[in-house]
Length: 434
Image 1: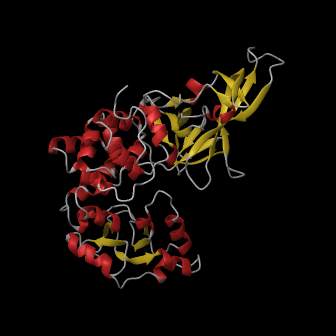
Image 2: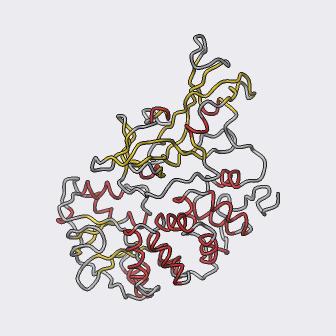
Image 3: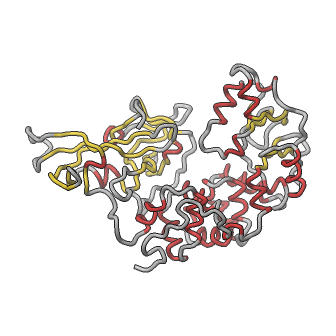
């Protein structure tokens, strides 16, 4: 753990106000949602339960929390107002962990019984992820007012009575075993499970993780998993997917079902997906993502590098930025040119991007066929390319990984040439038997 990493005791979050970036209050924190893990490993914090003005309780993922400090929580401003429903794999800290009786561990053995008064979460270095790392406990069986009751703070691993059992069937245990896998490797593992187990694991995954995994699965598996989710949850997962991947998945569904899910999605997310669905599949418009890095001409190199550092961006999308007149959300104002991140590293931070932008390379029209997109990327040694309409607005960017997905044979995921880490691992009972 990096020294100085922010740590917050969960009880101190109860009732804390949640604000959007403009300073407007969204609601107040009522609980913290975590997922327990096998073998005494610290739980991962999934998000916050926030009570909004209407007294509805909603779920706020930690990926949308930008600050937890000074008695307030700051969000990205993107909040899903659907009512929070706790899933089988999730645990509420205030509602389920506090006041529990657990045992201190000494020399590998469970010893004295203690009462949990509080737990603390800490943000992992260089990531948005948070996990529970400390437990504040009271020795003895007396009440909270007992004068001589000794209280102490210990590591999560120093107590037993919280974590999942090491043995036994269940989606939670299977998830814990798969937790360290990359999305592509987890997708490969899911693909080889029975349909029943695949559905159980998918139901227990949080929306962002499931979205990442769906993007790596064959189309048949995607459709099967999405079809077994409740419609509102399916819409949430589609929102968490990259718009181009969500559009590819929706294009496989019957028209009536596709329209129903689009209606349930947030209007802004649905609009991006609808726009992508309007293009032919094997064209630049059908392949592109609508969320590249876009900067206005008066942005600086420092601004550009800050955007490139976003850990949620794929390497292909982070490789270059596009300079456009406002608005800077696709479709943008007039497209001015492209900047590769290597050029950004060579210029002073205060340099305006408009003064170093590359405007010589022509962008792709949205109807450019896949073969021409491939040739473009290969000819100019690019990992992504801008897609611009007849009016000069940037519509999105085609990345090399999306091109490869459409060039490889349909069964390329079955051809395990290198055996990715964890691909050979199959937990006991993974075939669905109990």
